[in-house]
Image (cartoon, helix red, strand yellow):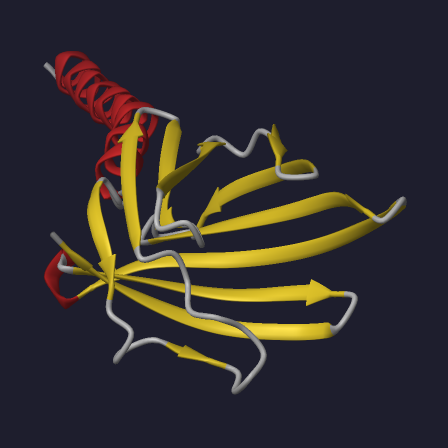
Length: 176
């Protein structure tokens, strides 16, 4: 009688340990995937909520279209040129921490996107290498993307280190 009670306790203990171990391996992956913010949508710049350092920088791109699928985020920046023609500049980022490189106007960009621990904000660090008048210049920018107002506003806080010094910009976009 005592032998079966001891075996029963060992079996229950083994079963509890098995359930806990299974949960440890499966649950974190599901929670992590569910908690990451999805920035997808069409976003229009709200100049009244945005801010730049006075006299240092023109406001950001008037319209962003963001498509986020799996570990990739594509951002179309839509703006009008001096000739009033609409132009689209596309950037693609890897959301798993891998570096991405793209050709850009007069040079290249290299970016790394990384999630905050809670998956609520995304930090994109970009290095732009440009050729101008036969000289190579480098500009580093760090953008922090967050959703506010129940997902109806996208705030991008940007800090750029340029040959003219550091510039800080906060751009707020409203979901369309």
